[in-house]
Length: 68
Image 1 (cartoon, one colour):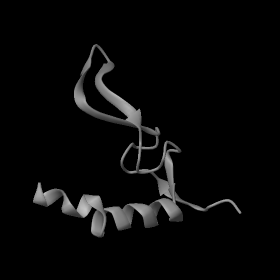
Image 2 (image 1 turned 30 degrees about the horizontal axis):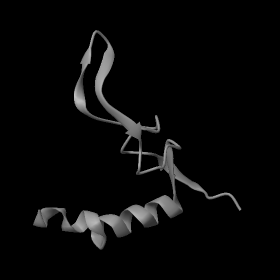
Image 3 (image 1 turned 135 degrees about the horizontal axis):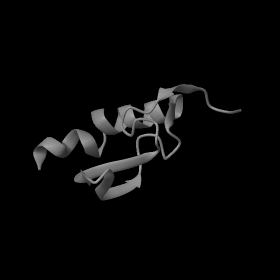
């Protein structure tokens, strides 16, 4: 059964690519580009993605980032 979409990914804006730590030079992004981990590169999130992300930020490694 195909997972139902819960909407466009807010982390990548629906592109499926995470863009971080860079700048736009002459209309081209120069910086880190990789697969969005929030939606696994689909561009939209499913209920499984939401569950995984909620766990990560509340109980998983992301919740302990403030300890670093």
